[in-house]
Each structure stands twice: as structure tokens, then as C-alpha cells.
Length: 310
Ligand code: NAD
Image 1 (cartoon, rainbow, N blue to C red):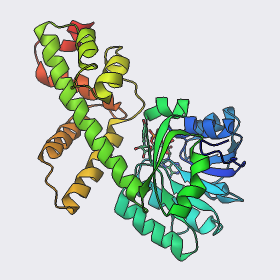
Image 2 (cartoon, helix red, strand yellow; image 1 turned 90 degrees about the horizontal axis):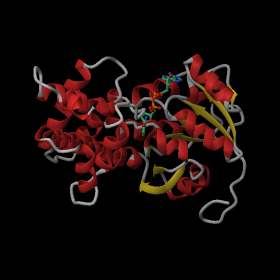
Image 3 (cartoon, rainbow, N blue to C red; image 1 turned 60 degrees about the horizontal axis):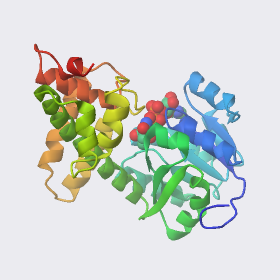
């Protein structure tokens, strides 16, 4: 039963993009009893779906066959557009199949795609997520849906098997807008809290003690409550969300601010710092590596705070 008490019927779900998020999300769908047919350009990703009991499609368009819903969990709008085509997945969908972009994409490009889909009778909505790999594994993602009331009601029981909180953000594109703004906040919080943490460590404070105090005080954020204790102090830097994707989300949010004529001086500075970190770190670096980068910038020839922590 869903949270609303409605029985969730078994659905045939096509799923494209079996990466850090797509694999745990498909696992939740499978555990909820849905039939998942997935595709990814990476053979390792396809094997991961098969290993957890999902069906692997031979081709991209194979996910469309008989699907009630097709979900995309791809890096962003350029990939979503490439996958949908011309001569792609969109043409292979039956008009009654609901198309759901759960990637963190660009609102205006999503609205344009939804219009293209509507012209051939297909409903496309956006339903990006927050909560990271950990939230995807636990089925506690926050899912923000952009679409009509009817489409929201249609998708809600399905996405509830992946999420703890499912919110109707507004019309198509609204989910993608909120998602980018959330990540703008998250990225600036991580920078601000890390500068403060590094200053405290340089002063000689114990980082765990700083966190204990801040997390019961007004300076707390997702960065102090989760990222610092779980990924920085443990030295794993393994949140499973790449720096490249974070920089993409910042660009989307700042474009939104610009389009709305809203000045975002602090956000622009944060984005500049994130882009600088991205260009100086190896490809594929986790976004939490921003702390190590800040630490090196702060102490280019001295003792980095990281060395003082461990
Ligand atoms: P990822 O890079 O781990 O996964 C993306 C997958 O898409 C990869 O497996 C890749 O092979 C596949 N792919 C790329 N091009 C393809 C194509 N043309 N056809 C089929 N498959 C293709 O990324 P992720 O971390 O899983 O993130 C996916 C989306 O979710 C992004 O938009 C990201 O911003 C968003 N997101 C990520 C997190 C996180 O913590 N990782 C959290 C919230 C939202």
C-alpha cells in the first residue's frame, strides 16, 4: 500500500541510466514488485541491473516495449536530449507511456522536450531527487515532481517506492528548477562550513567537537550533519555524487537566477570556486573533494588541516 492508502499496482518500468543513483533506485522498484527493464551504455552498469534481478534491454529503445512508465536517470539535459532523439526513445514510446526525467536537468530544456512529447501524445514530466546514493539505497529520497495534477497523481505511487517525501513542485520544469536551487544551497553550505571547519582545526579545535556543537546550533546544514562526519572525517570522500555533476547543477541554478533578473553574487563566487576545484582535480572526483581542495588552497606549502585531523 502507498502512504495515501492506494494500492500500488505492479508496473512495467523502463529505466535508462544505471549509474550511482540508477542502480539503487531500480533495486527499490524491483523490491516493490515492479518489472524493471533497463538500459545503460556501460556494460558494467547493465550487469549490475541483471545481478539484482532486473531485465536488461538489448538496445535503448528496448526499454519502451510495453512500458507503463519510462524513467531517465542520466547526467543531464544534453544526454536526455540525445537519448530521446530525433530517431531515439521518444519515437519508440507508445503514447500512453508516461515519460519521467528523474535526472537533474535544465528546466527550460525539459519544458521544450515536454512540448515535443505532447505533440505526439506522450506526457513527459520531471521528478528529480535529493538524498544522494544513501537516500536511493534506503528509499528515502525527496522527489520533486513537475507536471500536471493528473500526471503527479499517476506517478506518485510508483515513485513513492524510491522516496520518503514526494512533493508536487508545480508544472513541468518546476522539479528541475527546485532541484538546481537546492544544489546551489547545498554547494554554498559545503564551502561555507568547510572554510569554518578548516579555520577551527587550524586553531587547534577537535573537528568532531566542532560538529557536535554546530549540529546543535544555528550553523548546521546537511554538510555538517552528513558530509563532514561521513565523508570528510572518515577520509573516504565517497558520497557518490561527482564534482562535475555539482558544477552542472550550479550552472543551471545561476542561469535561472539570471533569467529571473535576481542577483546571485555569492552563488557566482561559489560556482567559480567549484569550477576551479573541478579543473584541478582528476576526472570523476567526488564533490566532497572540495574540502581537500580548499585545504590545499589554504595551506599550499604549510601543514594542511587534513594532516592535523588524522
Ligand atoms: P552517474 O554518472 O553515476 O550515472 C549516469 C549513468 O548514465 C551512467 O551509468 C552512464 O553510463 C549512463 N549514460 C550516460 N549516457 C548515456 C546514454 N546516452 N544512454 C544510456 N545511458 C547513458 O550519475 P548519477 O550520480 O547516478 O546521477 C544521475 C543523475 O542524478 C544526474 O543528473 C545527477 O545530477 C542526479 N543526482 C545525483 C545524485 C548523487 O548523489 N549521485 C543525487 C541526486 C541527483
